[in-house]
Length: 100
Image (cartoon, rainbow, N blue to C red; front, side):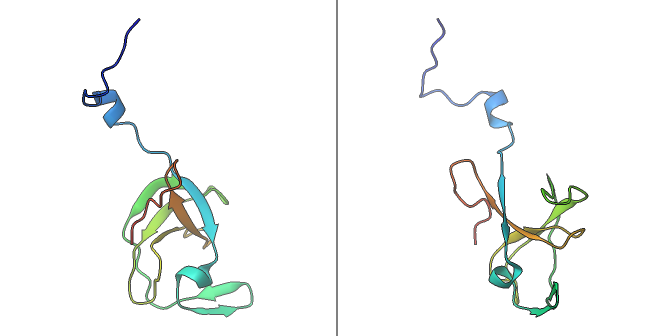
């Protein structure tokens, strides 16, 4: 039987496994300063910082965009350009993946 010494460093295979993210849909009013019009929430000058590998769990059409804190963004989050939904990202243990 093979036993692994806990003092050994992780193997190459263990180091390069991508962390699984759990996405939770957020109310845009809780993360971004803006105004609600009917079924739409409008905010000024929000910049995305890059495209993530994760796709939207609701519409499945596009890769999520990373939105970091800025003038009108209170909480860093992921955003879907296709269906305009906001998501919080968490690691398997419940730790937020996007640190403020």
